[in-house]
Amino acid sequence: MVSGRRVSLLFVFLSAIPACSRVLREDAELKKGIAHFYDKSSAIWEDIWGEHMHHGWYPNGTWRSDHQQAQVDMIDRVLLFADPEGKFSARTAVDVGCGVGGSSRHIARRYGGSKVKGITLSPYQCMRARVRTEEAGLSDRGEFR
Image 1 (cartoon, helix red, strand yellow):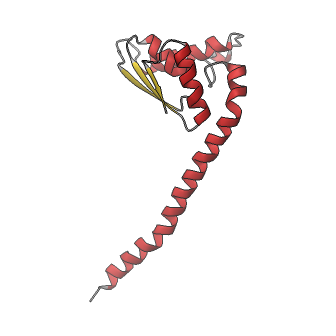
Image 2 (image 1 turned 180 degrees about the horizontal axis):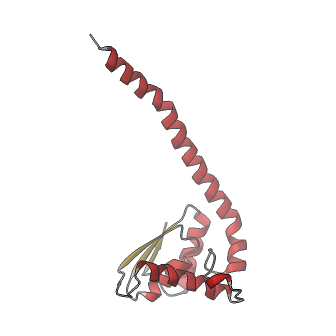
């Protein structure tokens, strides 16, 4: 005979399955939507911003006209935050949300000999990251998915 407590736990477990399935489906749909958005818009962003698809470093809100350098400076500030004394020596780095790989390539250059793995939801961005990395002569140090 099954106790009432076990039946209650089983009921709770079984009633949670549709909710978990819905969350997984919603997660997959969200990722598909994000990938679609980036597939359609990345060429425009790349044309405007260049190889870095993120904002730049503008200390104290000061205006800078060199936006691409501001983007590189932002990467360097993040790296400085992670390693304030400059003792870090990266052999492998992972760039999650790598866009077209600009930050990945910058890190590969900054830490000579390091390898970078870039991850994006967008097949278009992945393709552009691979092309730009090959053009930069860094194919052996950059991998994108």
